[in-house]
Image 1 (cartoon, rainbow, N blue to C red):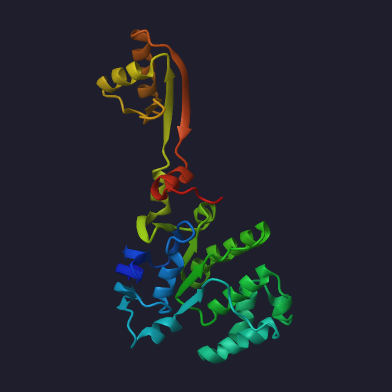
Image 2 (spheres, one colour):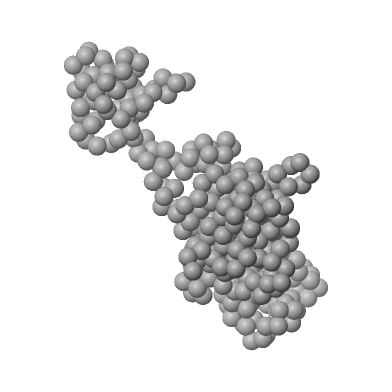
Length: 306
């Protein structure tokens, strides 16, 4: 099976407002799929629809190759773990007791508890009351609960929210280890491009409910190409000259700066010679790279959190 999740024109509308619109997700089996977008882009709503916590207005969802319907929803959920928004716990009970309750509800043997506690590195805090847990410990307990039953698919909604830098690093390392250790596919949402960049193998960028980009992370990085910025004594004339010479140049309509979409030595050398031959002074030649942040901003029109 190529994709563990596929959606076809998935839509969610409240009144006249579209929260998710014609979404076609393709989450490859065994991947860490980064679901990236600004706050309010529709990430949480999409994940709730995947889990049956919100009813789609239109479209289709397929998980494990079968359509998600009322008759097979429980069977799909048994093979799916999730951590959506803030995890809910019984504060007066210990971490282990909370996991015991989940085992009972899921029909999972309690012998699995030791394994998931070890995975999230909480063996030493398991007997502590949850009301005394830090936010990071609560997030890890939520992840432990999601891992019970060794699900094939794990859905994590903003799992690093509210964590300090050490907690973020620890959560990231845990998520990255899951596909190889347990054969899981992970769909993780975030508004933090830097987080997705360090975790994901594939990425989908959503804004205002619409999917703007979907492919491997490597493909997204290919858009982040290196090029040369050229500053001359007459940028307009320089652009026309280099264009006529069939060099890959373009000129920013607002700033007027000339960009050579190549760093190949022969093209850079040829550009310099042409400018000199036509008495156009070369003031600056600067290598620059379009960052992932710039790509995100261009796609969504919003600055990305770092």
